Image (tube, rainbow, N blue to C red; front, side, top):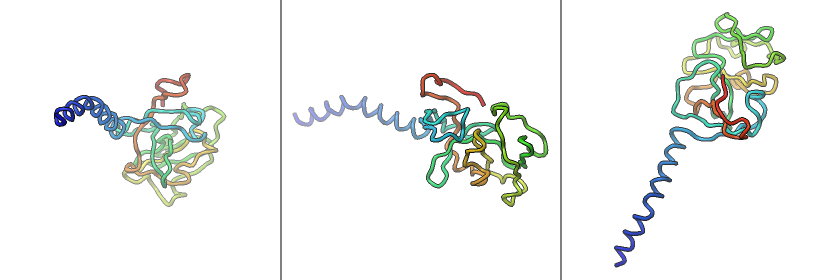
Length: 173
């Protein structure tokens, strides 16, 4: 009789166990919420905003917003430079491989200090690395400080806000 009761209990719990396993797998491998900590991505993203991180998408393009780990801290930044490229800022303008690239997501008043990869002892962004920057250029710990970010350290792409509710939805590059 005890064996029948145990089997019945397991059968009644099985749907809940399956749901828990599916949720854990989704959060581990597919999509998970992340919270913006600070103002380095302002005005695109605001402090304490909650976003969905797509972990399965590992094809990164210029101006994608990515989440990565740096010395135990999770950072959210925008990809500006791709592997094999040269990058330079002159007079608040981005130059990739010597060609001016417009950054439509930045407000007109946004200032960016002049710099180039040579300040890091690099001529090009190494293979498997990306140059990332915060949209709030004067208040961002990004590749200008920490150097290019390894693709292996990038957790995924985010382009969807879920909280606060007035920001709910997809945001553009």
